[in-house]
Image (cartoon, rainbow, N blue to C red):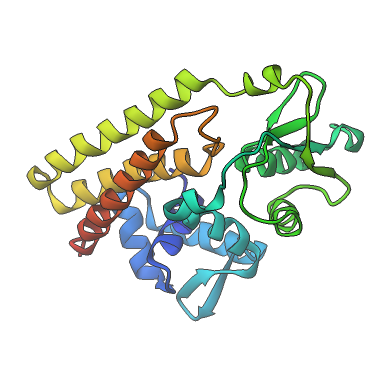
Length: 252
């Protein structure tokens, strides 16, 4: 993990301002040089993603709040969806062009983080089972990178949506749920045999991987995916998160 991602991860996980010495020590547990952590904090502050509350004390800044809220929303992910009535959410962006690579990355990140998939025609679609009303959903998309000029169509119907349903590989997604549940079970069983630093390092690396999987999950309805298996993975991560925080509490 980079110094940037570690700094943001630590500040997001503890949900309080942190001293630079604490961030450096945690970075050292992850094999990161203290100077690299300080450089990353400086850059994040200049971007506004992190802010210096007072000398040597850092917290998530205004520019990082939208992504931070999204990153921390994994534990309540199931509350973001509702029963699906067969309607679709469609976002059209091809008229915006693809020459600006940075804007393209930000745009597509916003769309994929909300579970939309690109069709062969260029439209981005997903089952409209998201619980948030359209104005709030649009604000969320814009806050994390979708252009305001994008066209968002809610509650669209399709006479034949079989091709759209096939955009998400069900078998692979469900295999991912099983994989992460097994990884967390195995890790929790071996943590008591490890040193404090090794246990903390493992819980962070595995925990971040699982959280990333949850946050990137398309949150599909039961018509397209085994939602019970997805809920089991999220519940397992809640327990593993508590184990990980206890492990980091042991790091001097």
